[in-house]
Image (cartoon, rainbow, N blue to C red; front, side):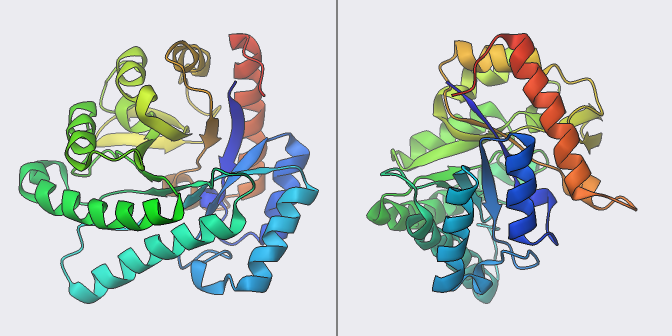
Amino acid sequence: MMQLGISTWGMPTVPIDVAVEHIAKLGFDGLELTVLPRYTTALGTLDGAERRRISGLLRTHGLTLSAIAAHSNLLATDPEEYRKEMGRLKGAVDLSVDLAQSAEPPAINTTGGGVPDEWEAVKPLLVERLEELVAYARSKGVVVAVEPHVGSALDTPQRVMELLRLVDSPYLKINFDISHFDVLGIPTEVSVAALAPYAVHTHVKDQRGRYPDHEFLIPGEGDFDYVRYLRAMELHGYNRFITVEISMMVVGRPGYDPLAAATLSYQTLSEAFRLAGITRS
């Protein structure tokens, strides 16, 4: 059965104590922890004591750590930049092991980088760098979840399938954010049928318009059919977290309130689960 979570992606300045308490009180089942540099939970700030404290917070509030968001540019051309990007990803793998709540550590989510027209040119480099990351993750028992993203080189189901075939490892799966396919005009049933079997984690938000003239929204602000989506995911055997992600398009709004955004998201998605007739595990 599926569970409902939220990423701290939309909470860059919220202390983890506040975020965890609010998320738990709303009724979410888990969270994805974001560890990018400008966050209160930036990887470089998470020493051993802080890792133990976060583990305790999650345990106290009954939340599952569904994934770690360590989004990095795997196609960085500057050697020093690439060293930092890969270093963050490998550090996130180590963090996953430290924060693991079961025999299956949380997945490490990352985008790939690039732009759509570059796909054929950058594909060999993306494969090479993912193979490096996946080899490290495999040595620790951690799955890497690469995220197809509108406007990036990895942006269609066909390209995702090609990438998975080329890397060919059970430790490489995908973080399936349906919003990136919805704004391309790909029907829900089509993207879900293609990608749900390879998804180890998901993101959902709301959206309107078509790429490149699209806008990402808080769940409940648009008209995305979550009931249809949830039923499709269930039909295709997905049984992990459905995780809300608040886009940077929203975070950048004047007066943005991350806790209010989480509240609206929970109301929207929990009602969609109810209407879809899907019981959360």
